[in-house]
Image (tube, rainbow, N blue to C red):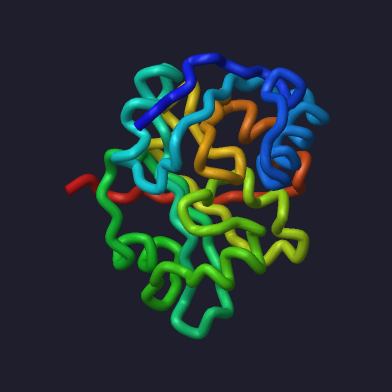
Length: 183
């Protein structure tokens, strides 16, 4: 993977970028959130992000967009990237029928994102408040965390406390904490 080690800390420093990333960075800049970002080749999987983690000095969150079988309940789960995910453990904790990965059409509709680019920042596009936000408790042990800014060709390092104390309140978004097992 090619990673640009030039760090950017604002949309102005980032320069020209795609509309999803631009909207995300504008929102973060407007709310006064501090972040550091780098650009890189497409990173569709956690494995793709290992080089990015080293450069940013922050673990990258695994972000999963899930739904029930009727596609009437949608969930964004963030968890440590090195943790294995099984739907049965999450379903039980949130009192939901067995969950599966939501399709690309639902992701676009509710988060304005394409597969591979899902992150907490997609909640900016959840104007109908249709997506439940779920956080694995082990992720909360990190001071900094990495998320794609609505496009998987760059990654931002951000203080986790800023996500929960500034970003989510700006969206008026609640979250639920779960305790998913390590295998």
